[in-house]
Length: 290
Image (cartoon, rainbow, N blue to C red; front, side, top):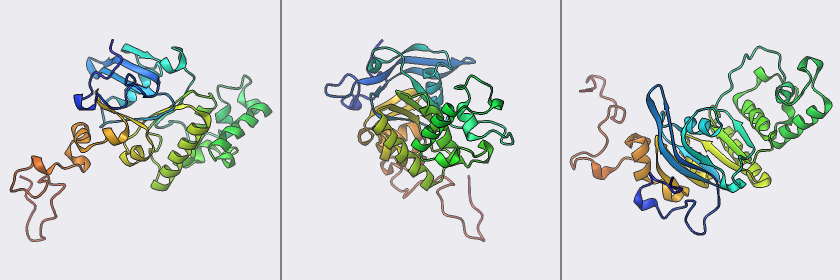
């Protein structure tokens, strides 16, 4: 199986990939990964690399297979092809995972401290959290600047606070690879900015590789060091400046990502003709959607 990108446009073959001289060692490689469920192809021969120590972002439209690729990596979905870990001597690294959302009963009286102890403490939680586990939970919460949440009820947390707790839970694995599915989903602009800055700081101080799915192109532009453009196949990958071009983004998202190619329009047209882009009709003249 090829270790280079099989679906990358020829114009991008000189960008940052695992085989180019002088580039980073890949933490992991997706090699011809394919996933089908219920007879429907979700991923088709996906080949891509995640550089060691990078912040790699997977972008693409809804239904592109981004979360499916993460779940294949985590062993939650069966797949064809290979996922290898050359950056870790071929062995599977310790992986921390931050899901896009956590479904739970917000009415249950579970504290943040108890939540972080789940799966790590042998004795039942109704006997309380051990002093050693409490200390570790506090340390992880302090790492994500959320130590004040230790005694808070989990169901009372805001979206941003819950994301920090989930990040603290992932860090308890002492991950070599941190995987995040839409980490800024549900956060306001300021909360998103703070959370992504926090991830950058943690990645630099702890040395893990970060792989995340994101729909937020400004976040990807400012924080990612490597980008994989996915729409069931890999359309392009490499450094953001080389990959996040109007041509690539239009190819995977379509023109309505705000990347209108004026050259593709008829000469008489000054702009997009879709109803969402037209100015409102005068009050005495109904809009024509024909």
